[in-house]
Image (cartoon, rainbow, N blue to C red; front, top):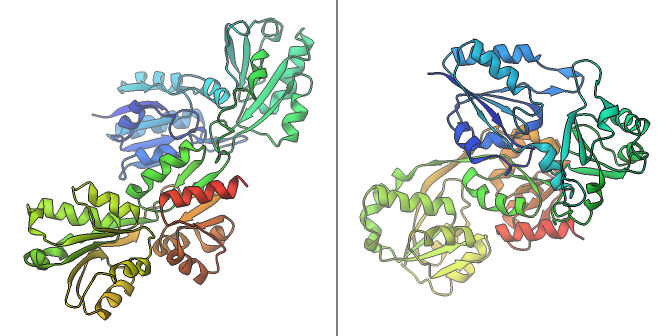
Length: 488
């Protein structure tokens, strides 16, 4: 049975989307989304879903509302579960009511998923509470954008108590402020404009009814913006928690696999950054290649795990084949905190974890205790460097290298957001190679480029891409370097 969900995606910040919206999106087979909801929600969408952009740029309407209504109906009648995604809340100046009425006419089942509305959340992120005891006991929200001319009743509006909020009206800012003053509101009443609130592109202008237009233009503000009038604007600096975060205003592109991106994404968002996730790599497990080595598991002296992917694929294969890990008498060795953390989840504590994610560093530690004829299993990527195998064999070790996964070119989801990124982070040579193919080398050279370590830097240098290298090859090392770059 087909069904349509009218989904509010919130104001643009990737974490201001409801749990209900996330759960619903996973089940949609067709997605229609608007400009103001951003694209971070797409990471929750089924990979097989059909995606349709039907945003309306100011002055350039890709689709009329009637065409959008027809498209929703058409997709539903073809049997799709349709996710109609809107910025903020579908019923607050989002024309969700019109779409719902059309679905009723067509006898199509629908459900509304409320969203975090922008007039409240955007001002919150700008340090402006819409109400405050003793200052504003209520608030009024108006749309400054109508089908024809703006027809707001300013003689009444100018006399209202509390906070006044005007949506979608930046191009009419002067008209709004002049009308309020002409109808009796004090020209010195505090006024602010917040542009693209809750995102890395948030900008703000603060002044009075008399000068706010001049200040907004000086600060380079444009649509989409929210205008707020009232004494609560005076809190804009004191309660300005978001703009004081160390990575505020920065859009950071993460290029690793989806699973590997999760931890650093959460930390970057908490530090005020906006994350564009382009999974330039996807992992194709080839764990069946372990089969010839299963009978030899009890004979190895060491098992070396060089990535979190290798750890997960290796141990999940043992679980799938019901192989008792106690059959492995070998000592485990890891490289870098990610692989170390991954094997500990399976109840295995390594005897050594090389802190730097560099094979040369790992070998320097291993050569202190390995000896001739030691048997070593090395389950890892097909595209791994040959250095470690050659170095271990040079010491007389017997090395079984098994390629248990292959990195492949990732999907193109999120590519059109790359133009808004300030910095792109590379964590392996493969991410460099794949991103060049996905977005072009010229686009990458236009960004601030961060390399996790020297091995990744080799590939960047090969392509003449200027970059900054982390002091530590880890998630924390990348975060420390980003804070250093942007908080000098």
